[in-house]
Length: 344
View 1 (tube, rainbow, N blue to C red):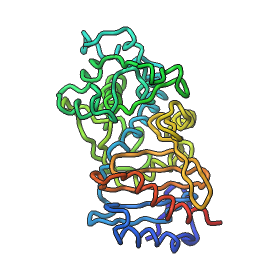
View 2 (cartoon, rainbow, N blue to C red):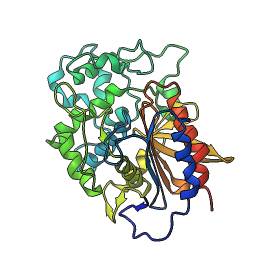
View 3 (cartoon, one colour):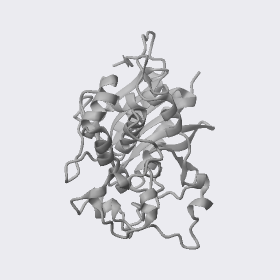
């Protein structure tokens, strides 16, 4: 069924529909394991929307760490309201957590931007099972804010580049725990729960009225992942950033925050930079390489914005136990979706 984004008075035909039929065929054949939905929009028009499970369009999708990027949007809205600054030190807002384990004056200098860019000096690395800050260790305790605050300062052995030696001046490591601290911080500065703040300032302007938040054991919203939204609503968030923070003619998120969020602030992996909880990654299809910025979650869940193609792509999956799940979703993107979007 062809639908249109509410920001356009759209008319005309679905010019790429036939070319995108290959997506349906390949997923139905099991080529991409448990993909649950694909939504593709270009030039503000919804080109393709298909659901591959019994839950359908109204299902709330748990896209895991995709929700981290939404936390970054909320931080931008708090900054617009002068409740925070990107250079605001975080831990001074939590006097109830003192005294801190592994006390170090550098902890009090960790800023909101450090958490948004996964580059604080805390010893926290989800990709290292031995890391004290690994998210699996956090889930075992009740007070996640204290868990973060009590982490030691990270060491830099000779074979690892220090922040000042790293691209963009930041040493990156994937740290869910740091992002979970943004939720309680937003509650403190806004005097609202995160769900209420998000509903009023982000979701309502976009017409997003069905949301499910995961909660931390002590009750704050989990801003490190697990936020559940419909696939089309995920697409709206990507379209919002593609359009510079505007929706239906209204500036929902400041254009300057959008620009800062999708600029490179740290180097995450070879060939991939990191913004404010956005992955900055090039993709190549039909011999052409285009830059993207995107949200990503375990299992290959993705919301990808492709500015050069004026397009947004949403891929949701339950490939949580599938090896190389992200590579599988990226193959779907580059082999079947992007070629259709590149047609004149």
